[in-house]
Amino acid sequence: FNKYVFLFLFGLTTIFEMARWPLYSEFYNRRSKSFNRATTLSLANFVKGLLDPVILGTAAFLISKNITYPFILSLFVALTVVLFFRLPHDNLKKVKYNKKS
Image (cartoon, rainbow, N blue to C red):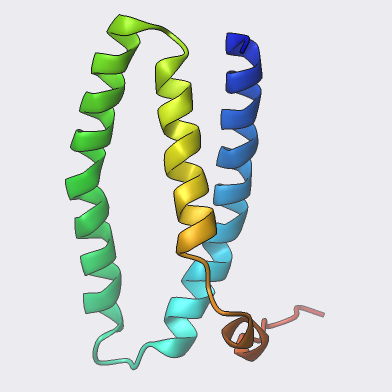
């Protein structure tokens, strides 16, 4: 594949992931009880902090082999999250958004 195709796919998955974040934030805030909401969000951020150096280190190693390999890694990680860690459809219906008039 062309490296520009991977760059486009990476950008597309990044946009989709960023568009999903407000939904996850709203989901956490609605589903978590007030006494453990901060703990849940803190632990999620902690796990992200642990995984970032591993993923970035792997990407740094891969870029030394071929410039397209980090794009493949990013696409794989993004697709893994989207496909295997999505919210059940029933939970999405329970989230109600405040509409500003």
